[in-house]
Image 1 (cartoon, rainbow, N blue to C red):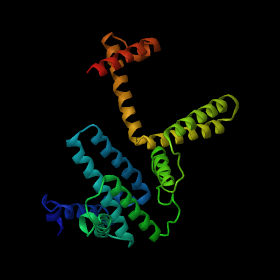
Image 2 (image 1 turned 120 degrees about the vertical axis):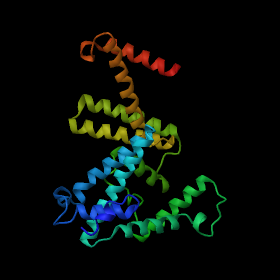
Image 3 (image 1 turned 180 degrees about the horizontal axis):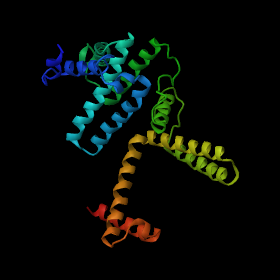
Length: 272
């Protein structure tokens, strides 16, 4: 085909990737799987690739990060190709829109505003610019624009940040801790006296307030929980390794033995 040289030229950058995507979606000569996809079927892959980028960063796996960023870029190209086919917008429209947004949101870099301001002041200015953008989109409510498909813990964090901007917030971390104690008591009561639906509701309330505590402590709860998950995996695998040295597996052990090994591993990590 006439465009084969472009596809086989590694030095043509983004234009090569765009052409590969166009060819994959060609209704006559493309890949049947790619042709069948739509925005809804591709969206889960987009979310997955974003998490794989975050995972590579957390592990400082820089060689892997290059590939994961490429996978995430491909997701953007895939969505843009489908949008172009439907007449919505093109990849160049996406690039133009993002470039315009970054220039508009950084007047201290690309405009006449002074760069002599603190990081906190810059954050407030950034939020003011975003609020003005939302108002132009007829998003008047304080919570408008928080994506519904975010992970629930991260969405709770963002919803609470938005509410805090208009004064709906506790003044002191101690108030949040008191609310956590209250919600924990309600959860215990629900466990003993209420239905499964009530228990789920009370558990959700507790998680929501814990996410708010993270915000007050400048801890992003989704990132904190990912870190703890990784720590749990590391320590549990170390427990399994120590059991294997004894010719045993976890199923051959008991809680007391595994807990003792767990505590020994924690102590080793602290000494390291």
